[in-house]
Length: 132
Image (cartoon, rainbow, N blue to C red; front, side):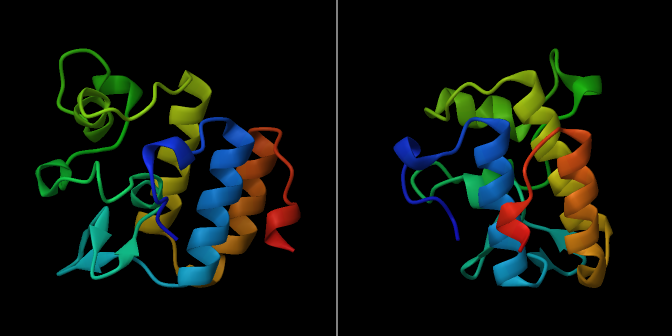
């Protein structure tokens, strides 16, 4: 489920985890076109894409990492582009969490998502009740 408005974008690590985990396990498929992951496509969304309301989404962000510490300064990142359009500022912890969740979506088989979501929650000291 893609967030509906800027005001409904979760910003705390726990809220981000709950939203993304619920989205991924409900959608139960990757958001991909020709082996390229997409933020949004045909009503589907990736782990980071489900945090981007349609009002902020731009195809121009496709192909760019949402966030990556290695490229924080001076590189094109979807997060930086979204910030110019009104996306809320997120803590470094929240950005790192989104990056980990995006990596799960892009690189792991769906059958491994739930167990790896538990590992990510443990790594970030988050509750996992949304997985039950």
